[in-house]
Length: 93
Image (cartoon, rainbow, N blue to C red; front, side, top):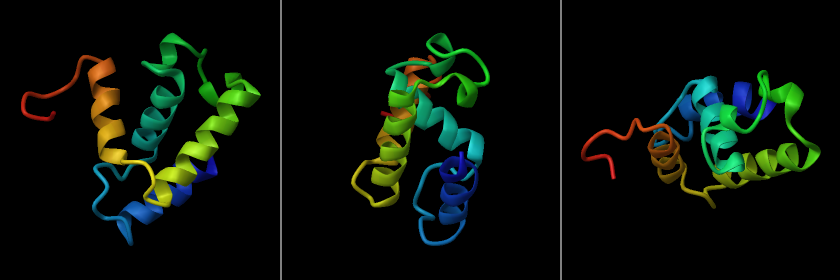
């Protein structure tokens, strides 16, 4: 929660301004969708933070760490998240 609600939004406003999102709920959507391999709420009950398995939580933290380190492309993950949701805008891919 700290990574997606505080750390990543702060980085997006400062040193990581090239990221495609800045809001905490966007980071949460991208990370949870990636961990679930699809729209997260089709796989996890709401609220997600109360229903993640230990493995899912560990994978979410590791993914956040890789995004922050620049080892994982947040733009690509964001596009994939929108694709799973059927919200991919024409010309986004």
